[in-house]
Length: 145
Image (cartoon, rainbow, N blue to C red; front, side, top):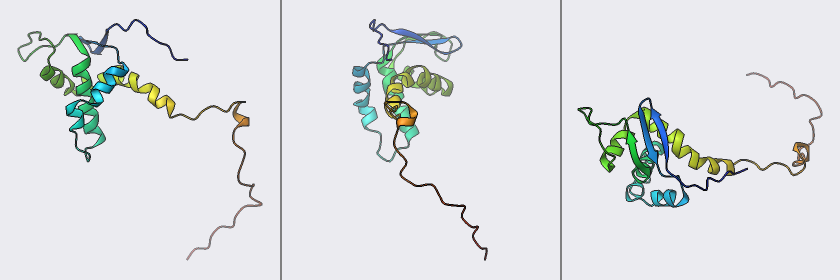
């Protein structure tokens, strides 16, 4: 069953010890806007899946991040989110992975579920019928040389 969150409120996500970000809900409008982001569209056609994932994640984060805690500049002074700071944050590998797992993958989960095989209407034994007849005996081992 699909559970709908009708509150549509931003949520805090912990990305690392002491680091958390407040993110907009991952809605259809947010995903569509990210897919048409100029940076995402500028990714070359021959780019790797990894390059595409990084471009998409950064574009999505620039749209989704509303606030954060535990993030500062080189001197350790807290800084506010900005496009440059968000991109720099996602350049930190463990943060990128946590963002992908806690936020992006939730939005893609339904896409993955749609690609699964449908259940048989009357249980597993009611699925497709066999198309091949059973073998009559064991095949002989092939000769060597």
